[in-house]
Image 1 (cartoon, helix red, strand yellow):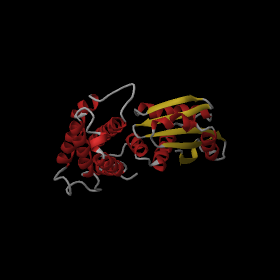
Image 2 (cartoon, helix red, strand yellow):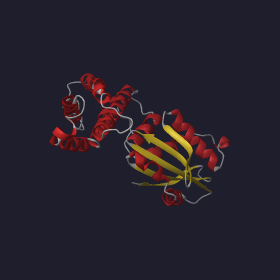
Image 3 (cartoon, rainbow, N blue to C red):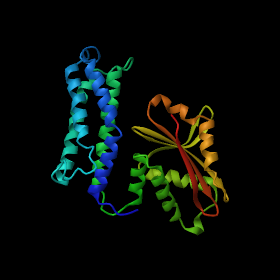
Image 4 (cartoon, one colour):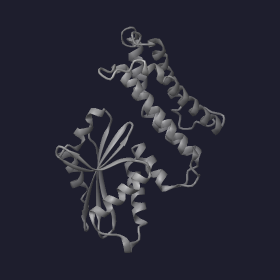
Length: 274
């Protein structure tokens, strides 16, 4: 990995984060605005909710450029201040969503708007953390970043590097050893990771959740053979993803193969499952 200063790292993250969401936000906003008299105006504080949605769309469009400073913002400080104001705007308008909260029968407009608002706050807060990192490349930070932006090859590459740092003398050639190492590493990074997650058709080795995506991992171990195809096929054949489809977010399966000769990952396969 080449060094990347904190501004470039933040710009790259923001561009990818908002580019992956803006078209959907814009389409949602256009549909709701077109049917505003029947869909959103009848809700409590409906006009404010419509303004809130339009405000989200317009503010999100600002961060689509690959180079934000100095094209959109005069300085890094003004970019960071803008992100803080956007986060505050999202938080301050939560009260209009709360006015319409119903546990028994949630309104779909409120449900989707709440999901957009929460996702954007998560993304902005992570961008602020990215900017606060030191200018050196820290593998753990890059590992988290790569999975958030769905760069699975980058994620696997850094994970292999971390596993390579384990001393040969204490490296055990057992599947459970590598599984526990991966779980411990990601848990310490703050990932929302579950191991041995039970389903109606077996146990998933590991599940990692983000606000807008879910990753399902299956680990296989062999002396030399790349078993990643077998691992991914197990995820698909046992339909591990079906447990999470109700959450309406992209779900990815990742089969990872460990090798006793290399004492590391010797292959992986990934696929979008829904």
